[in-house]
Length: 187
Image (cartoon, rainbow, N blue to C red; front, side, top):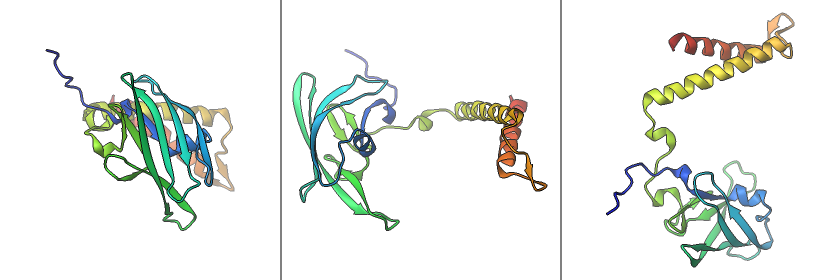
């Protein structure tokens, strides 16, 4: 018998369908009914070729997906809702998760179904990394930013002061360089 995997399930390891992705590909236009094929890609899992239909013309907007999972044809209908923006400017569109019924902007493709992240137990990468590895990642990132800031100042593209006062950009770059030197001193 095969031993089940003891590694945690990561949200980032699954294919994701987002409203931003559909807008970018031209499938999401208000007042339109659009059909076409769409390929979901991810570096950790195989791509998924889907036929989708986005209906934003009717009173009940929806998204239909047709795809294959393990050689079987699947059909999923996902309702769409628009809610007034909290800024008072227009409306914001959301998927209605077919499993949980929650409003979301991103659906994950797990075991042949599209669902919200709360429908399955998963983790973000920062939740499973140790404190030491998170600190190391931050330190390396600070050092890289500090080196870039130092190059920017030495290139002469940044004005150091204006009217006798240091510029905000120059102060920000100096702060990044200081962070990098502190990180180098600790390592």
